[in-house]
Image (cartoon, rainbow, N blue to C red; front, side, top):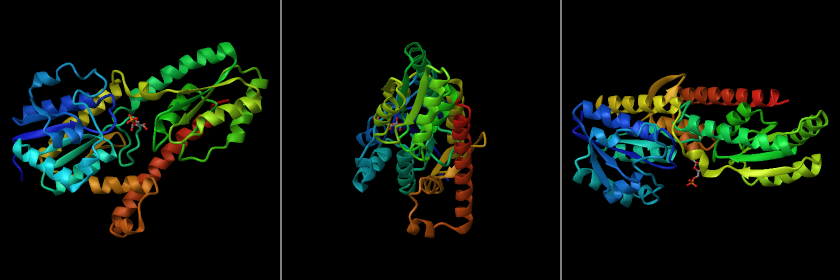
Length: 353
Ligand code: F6P
């Protein structure tokens, strides 16, 4: 078993509030065990470029309340190539890094597994506002982003009420509409449209028309970014078919910033410390997940297959390589996730008028 002397920590992919809390927890947990920590800047790109600094406890002081990531982030295409991977491994050897904790989304985990199989034990921590990693019930950053969205939508609603308007608000969420569903539910949106659930546009327009007839003045419609190119056209159709003056708002990157909420600070701290514990126990090629409110570890290959299965991207060839028992476990995780999403979606729909 590797005796760890120095590990690296990095953040990769889209930044998410709470990533700093995870970096802090990783750093301090490792230092407490007498293991040095190298803060790697700019994700896997920074690893390949040898852009890093030895962290002391004070380097992570005061960051738990800060949004973004003090380690910066990037999406590194070169890291997906064997050449890029070999560069990264050479940098690890040169800097005597014998393990890595990588915080990010599914792309980050693919990088983590590639490093693990090449002899650099790596552990992933899920950090993305989208909550779109199917192996875990929760990803760091989601709660902060969802709270930012509801604060902004509440403000938009004030002006809709004054002017008797409808506002179609597009929120982030490339692959999954969790941000749209939960913020739509929490703001009483008259309709929520996401890429992964069929949307009944006619019924939504009818709800707006009937509610207007009954004297309702403000209408919020939440559309996930994953329902590509839909929101603006839908805004026009609402106005044409109901006579309600309608506006379109894309919230954009404001959703990714800001001081993390309690949920994100606590979850990130628990996951960070757990990741270090598991790495030092000799576990590698794992991702830290939250399942039924418990922090657990899952093999990255298994987690990535769950994700593909959930998103309908698992090929027959990949499926054939999975044991029957594992496949049944994966199906159970996907079924639970689908049921939870549908419950939230249906409650949003049922309670909106
Ligand atoms: O993955 C997080 C996310 O914010 C998505 O919701 C969004 O589609 C994407 O990142 C935006 O990426 P970028 O910041 O590179 O434009």
